[in-house]
Length: 120
Image (cartoon, rainbow, N blue to C red; front, side):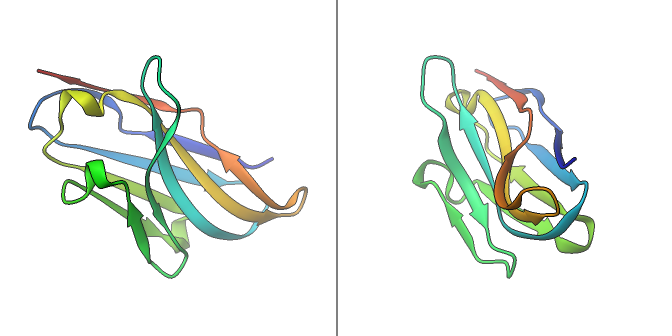
């Protein structure tokens, strides 16, 4: 069974920083793209940032220059460094990965989400 487990969320004041981590485990052959998404109350889930296996990154305009996505392929882990946080960054953050697994072949997998709350 494949799992994505996020950690690092919490409560922080505006202007502060948080680092999210997401580790994939299970019967995985290879992980292709990994990314972070978020969903605020009453809003649709939106892309925050993605990173390819080779390290090419993509960011939502709202987080460019403040957030940095990175990954450690040896550890099957993706990170999101969030700086200069704003109250509008408050959301549940989800990790996602496209991977090839024994059971499902090429498929998308999601973590359970971690809450990030930014106070003004």
